[in-house]
Length: 221
Ligand code: IMP
Image (tube, rainbow, N blue to C red; front, side):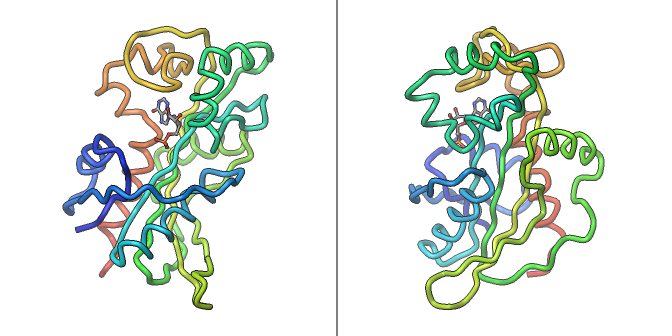
C-alpha cells in the first residue's frame, strides 16, 4: 500500500491504474514553497507529507511551461490560471515566434529511507522526447535524488519522476478537459479536443506515474 497525498480524488483514481499496489488517498493540503521548479515544490511536498503521515507517501506537482517565456507559468500555473486566466496566457505566448510549450508533472516519493540513484533511465522509450523537451525548457531531469534536511539534522531523501509532453500554445479550442487544456496542442489536437482516454495515453501525469510505478514495482521493501 502507498499513500497519495492530494486533495484530488480523481488523481488517486488515475494513479491506481498505473500502480499494482493499492493507492490510498490522504487529503492533506501541505504548504507549497515559492520555488522556480516543479521538482523543488514536489520534493518539499513529499517531505512535508511524509512527516505528517509517517508512512510511505507520494505527491505530484504539475504545470505548463512556455519556452519563450522562460518556463512561465511553470510552478505558478494554478495561481496564474486563477488570477490571469488561460486565454491571457495564450495571448502572451502567441506574441512570440516560438510557441513551444510542455506540460510537466513531477511525482515525488518519500518513505524515510535513502535511495540509490537509478543508473538506467526508467522510461527508455520516451527518454529522447522527454530530454528534448527538458533541454528546451532548461528543466530538471527525472530520477534525481534530492537530499533535504528535516530539521532534526538527518537527511530525508525524495525520489523524483518527471513526465513531460511537448506541444504548442494555440488559441483556445475544444470543450473537454480542464485548466490549460484548451490552449495546449499536441499532435494536432488540443488536450480539450481529446477524450479522457486519448489524453491519459500521452499526458505528463501518466508518463510520470508510469515511471514511478515501474520503479516502485522493481524495488525491494
Ligand atoms: P496541480 O499540479 O494539479 O495542482 O495543477 C497545477 C496547475 O496546472 C493548475 O492550474 C492546473 O489547472 C494545471 N494543470 C495540471 N495538469 C493539467 C492538465 O493536464 N491540463 C490542464 N491543466 C493542467
